Length: 178
Image (cartoon, rainbow, N blue to C red; front, side, top):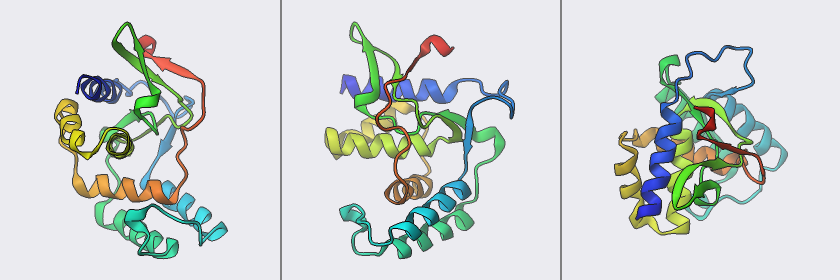
């Protein structure tokens, strides 16, 4: 449970960073739901029969894409003030620890300004697989920001349709960015 707490606290710390000084010229992408849908369309058109996870296997990729698209209309994009710095694919393997203390994350290929649920969906799903679903509530308790469940579900589905952007990088970003 200590590791789960450190993981949640590091993500919360990342999401609390002041991004107001970032300008459009800075090299931080913005990931919107509409951008994700466009990428999901591209991926689905290129490989409509690519398998998805077991939870979604009862539907085809094109049908799942329709659900993703309708979710954007139903949920809407988060406002500018609700954009946070996101890692893109936070999991326990990317948690950087020194002397038993979590200090940041590795694998920053997917860093972007986005809805916090982008990271929360990936983190909670990876915890459920790596440790077990019983730790997910403890993760959200330590994160201290109650997730919007519909947004969390939307980003979980998006992860099934669009390959994760943060896999395989050896780049490291820690609290030194504070």
